[in-house]
Length: 407
Image 1 (cartoon, one colour):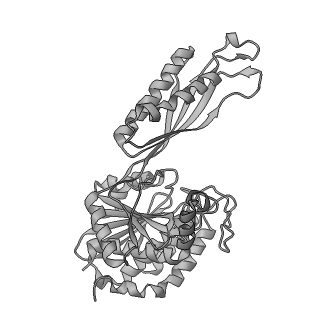
Image 2 (cartoon, one colour):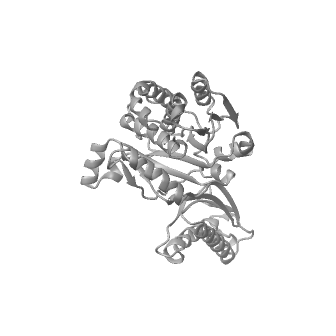
Image 3 (cartoon, helix red, strand yellow):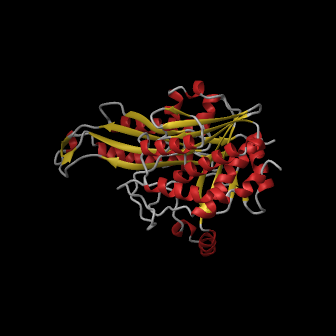
């Protein structure tokens, strides 16, 4: 048989995967607290006869050693979000205020399905397959936690790494792209200082509310006036907090910013501009103290290696029917997957799986209402269509592995 013939029998395990997916969806857990999720993954892998290595509190890895050949790492993230579900599904979240609103439950289930298929069909491939289940992607802590717990010393060094993500695109599609596919993301807390006073005595104050307002306005010029129109960048002020009472001028104000970029040089330049503007406005206002900058929730750029992406794209095109494999558009979302291959110094490829009902998506596209009618990741209404999303996602993981390991 050819190395992909065994995928024709995937229907015999899809019932198991559907039930598994619904179980994961019902019991979502937040980052670094995915204890039930991790235990269930461990149970499924152990039932296949595989050994499991726990790395960090809730991360885990299974290694399939199958003779000589390359080593491939495939990653699935496992955490949920602090979102109250509003899908109406009969398998909706049973955890108050927590939901798999980003589709990580689909990622877990697809990777477990791929592991089972590869484990049961070892005559179709040769080498080493590493299935890595990563916690806490949503706050960029999980990949770092596994790395800090000795990931690179505890598993074989991969030659290549793969990951995928369900997105609000037509189900039945796989979307690939070389180069930047997800943006780098940075959040920053800025505190500026004034001099407090009574609201009736503004001449005795340095008003941080006014200072923060001028900073917010000036920050808008970073993208509109300092960034080349051909370069992508987003600077968002998500919160401005100061004061507690109408007749009290406070002594400080806090701004929360979020940045998105596809180029690390652009990122560095924007950060420098933010600090320059904030420091300059503080001096102009006579602020009594220097501002402070606290950077957090920092996500790396997801930048697909050209050769790795070309190889996996060709493998997808060779296997799937025409019209399934489509070019991806870079997404402005961010994630921490690339920290894992970067820790090993290896190339990687990351692709998107369509998860929205194709007919519904087509109708919304024709009406020009995709942005309003199709729930996106992190929405309380986000609900991947199980079929054929689960089958396509499982097969994509297997095909990607076989592009390196196939006999």
